[in-house]
Structures are given as C-alpha cells and as structure tokens.
Amino acid sequence: MPHRRLLAPRKTRKAARSTGRPPAGNGDIRLGVLADFIGFHLLLAQNASFRAFARHSGQPDLKPGRFGALMVIHNNPGITQVALGRAISRDKSTITPLVQEFHRRGFIRRSPSPVDRRSITLTLTRAGEAALRELLAHARAHDRQLDAIAGKRKPALLVLLRKIADELG
Amino acid sequence: MPHRRLLAPRKTRKAARSTGRPPAGNGDIRLGVLADFIGFHLLLAQNASFRAFARHSGQPDLKPGRFGALMVIHNNPGITQVALGRAISRDKSTITPLVQEFHRRGFIRRSPSPVDRRSITLTLTRAGEAALRELLAHARAHDRQLDAIAGKRKPALLVLLRKIADELG
DNA sequence: TATTGTTATACTCTATAACTATA
DNA sequence: TATAGTTATAGAGTATAACAATA
Image (cartoon, rainbow over all chains, first blue to last red; front, side, top):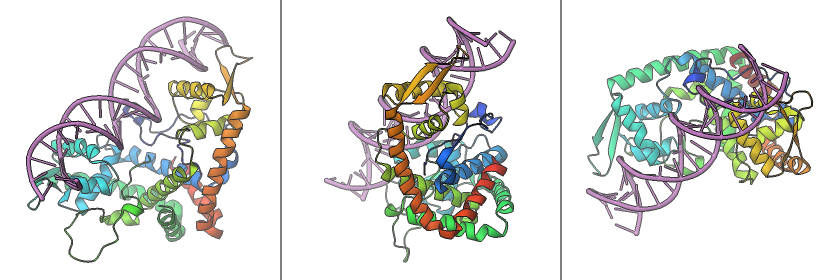
C-alpha cells in the first residue's frame, strides 16, 4: 500500500544523524489494516535498511543521493550529465550542483565531449574511485547483515523483489 | 522520494542493448555489483511500488505524507499532536501545519484534552473517514497487485520484511 | 524543570523556465 | 528547431530554536 513514509525520514539531517533512529515511544500506536500490506512492509524494511546503512557508513559528508550517482559514473565512464540525470531519474538542473560538488571534492574529471561540444563527459578520478570503494565496502558489510537475516531464503527474496520492481515499475 | 532511483522508470529505459553504442549515451546504464545486494533490490522494489501507487491513487490533493497521518488518527482517535508526531517520526513543528491543513479541509476535529490543558486531541470527522476510506480503497487495489506477484509466498515475504525492519531498525 | 503546540527560520532535494552555446 | 549545461527561482518536506501556557 501506502507508499508513504510512515516511520522515518528517508534521509536524516545532521543533528538527527547522530542518533540515526527515529524517536522512540510509539509502541502503543495501532497500525490497523496496514499491517497486512506488502507495500507497507516494503517501505518499513527499506527505511530500516537505509537508516542502518547511513548509521554505519561513516560518510556523513556524502549525501544520500550521491552514492547512486558515483556508482553510475563508475559503471559508465564518459557519461554525460544529461545521461546521468536520466539514469538516476533527475532533471539536468539537479545534476549541475551534484557534479559541481563532486568536482570540488576531486571525485570526478569533467572533459569536453570529443563528439559534441555541448556535452561534458564525466569520469571518476582516483579519489572518486577510492570514495566509491569505501562506500561499497560499507554497502557490502551492510548487505551481509541483510544476508544473515534472509539466510537461505535470499534467492527467493531477490526473485520476489525483482518481480515487484519489474512488474510494477 | 522516494529515494534514490538508480534506474529510470521502465518506460523511459531504452530497449536496445545490442550493438556498439557509446559507453553511456542514455538510459542504458550498467549497475555493477549492486545487482546482488538485497538493500538495492529493496530500494528498487519500494520505489516501483511507490510509483505504482502514486500513479493509480488519483488523489493529487492529498499530499504524500498525509495518508499515514490520517491512518494513525483513525486507528488512535484522541491522539495528541506530539503522539502523532512520534508515530510517524516527525517533529511536532512538522505536525502543526499538517493538522492545520486537515482541519481546514474538515478532515479532523481538534478538541482540548480533558486531562492535560496543554494538549489537543485529534479525531477524524465523517469527511476525514471518507477521505481515508477512498485512499484505502486505492491502497487495497494496489496491494492486490503486490499480492498477485507474491502469490503463496506472501506470508514468508512479510516475515522477512518484518525481520529486516525489526533487526535493522 | 519538562512538555505541548506555535512560530520563525533555514536547509535539502527537487523541478520549471529562461538563457547560452552548440547541433 | 532541438539539445547540453547553467542559473534563478520556487515549492515541498523537514528540522532546530525560542516562546507562552501548562504540568
């Protein structure tokens, strides 16, 4: 169902990040029919997973959306800004400050496209690759927690999640 | 937010995956090691579920966060603003404009608490219950799609998702 | 002193529209 | 005409801090 954030902000601000958890004390709240909705539990699980990752990633500087962008640049070196925007479903005007931040931090190289002088191609620098590797290490450690919870049901779980993403997307 | 969408919605993804295209011209993006992460698929599934719900809910007027709040008030009539905030993990300063909007639209009644003169208790009006019912109908229809995808594995899926939310939350 | 609700303010993320320089 | 990237601006959602009333 509801694809609404019932429990947690999808990203926490600096102050809230120190605790990393939503305020406690809602134990006596009744959820009603929501309790049987797959979508609702999907939401809760994803939020918990995200919070746990943010808590342990130790990269308070690298904001939520940045990870996916780094990943896409890594896997698609030479991608243009507009293509990056399409890949992560963001408008080009949203990409501009993002790549500016990456550039300021020395994570990417911006080179004029050899084939289209309007375009700028993006590639990760050594520092960018290193930052991504570190994030990936945290992501792997985090996913090992999830693996431990899923146990031998992991393949079945992945199949279901993939089906949901494919058939509903 | 939905959160970080790493993939464009399916319709905008290009099908052509065959010949020698430039490494990254458009939406044909390679995901790399993320592909085996539970957390990543959780994210995609939740985003897809969210988009599908938003697409079919046909309630442009009722903004995202509002549904969960209505639900909580329905299930906990007489709840105070601070308690509502805790239930949906929002600060009380975020709740104020939310309840003001509900009140303006005739969805809730605000009565002074009989036991604590600092508090205001919230209950849904007829109109509020009706609005919630309509949203619920959409939510149910949406979750039936998810049920169809999960099939007889639904109970096992819910168990896993609950475990993830509990142990990581 | 602590808590409830309100207000003032600020920050993040996002988009649209207008602009430029190319195509 | 159309597209790539930048800039200006706006809106939604959230939070912190300070306040008055009350506990």
